[in-house]
Length: 67
Image 1 (cartoon, rainbow, N blue to C red):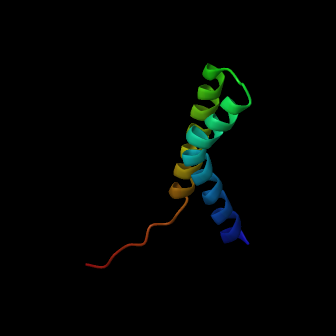
Image 2 (cartoon, rainbow, N blue to C red):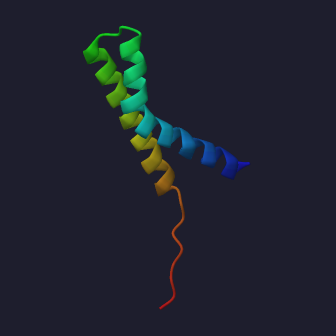
Image 3 (spheres, helix red, strand yellow):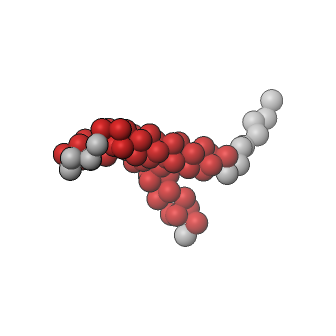
């Protein structure tokens, strides 16, 4: 169950990181949201996605290699 939640959070992080600055801004422009606000929302989604992605990667345990 924990792995499934982690995978869904990773997918959400990827969607926020890549989809926020591109598709979200496009949708907001089509809804006649002011340009500055749509850019700020896109930047915020990118920041949240990147932060979530880094948080999830820090939680992974590193496997030691034998030499």
